Image (cartoon, rainbow, N blue to C red):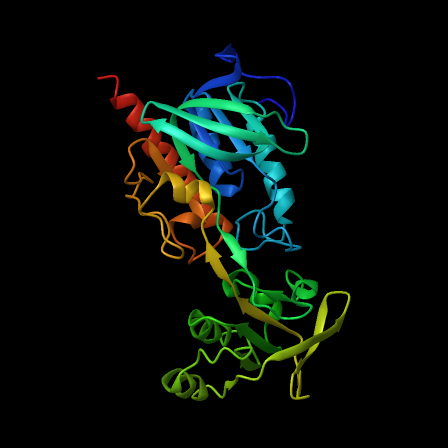
Length: 324
């Protein structure tokens, strides 16, 4: 496999119409578990593949990833590096640091415009198929100092990070209705739990009554400060001066899809994701999707990797059967 950002390219690369164009069977947009797993399947199917990744994964703030068999506790960036190393033995796979700004064309003849980052090359990739594995964009509630604790003692995935927060005093923070479901899930691990809507008032009477059955209090007062040291949360201070002791917690973000996905697949939605069949085929012929962009929950690395593998099998089958 070509090294990230190197000048080494596939044997099919050539100059065309004054621009630098690489011709491949598939371009994979996104180099996380979904994209890397898809690339491995396609590489072993003797397909020529370019993977483009901007190196800004949603979980980059997390110290350790969990729930991935044989790799439990591995830092997420290290997990990606291990995936890239697995692909190095396959000569027809190239990894590029870059952002895909646009994709045009149709099934059998797509053109992706790539803007290089981290020293990666800019140019165009011509591909017979497109596999979208970008992940989603994440917007956290506007809480002072939240980023200081996000990924160390405050997380977004209870099934990923609940074990480390077991039997602790937790806060669950959010400003959208999905906060209630996150709070219910977090109760599996919490010794004591307080839900903070940060002034949004998203918890209606029914939600409050449901949480009250588990002695979970809902507070609408805006959050003024988070307190702690070296990323370890110790308390939450509200705007009225109330201080809630907590050793960790969970946050409910807002999610959206990257613009390149929205531009290419019109059936995409902010939370529901790209609609596909069981093999990752979207409503646009020749365009496949895997990972979080198909639907943010449940969100685990191992699920994304499995979806990448399944989509790659569907894609490869389509290329095979098109010959008959």
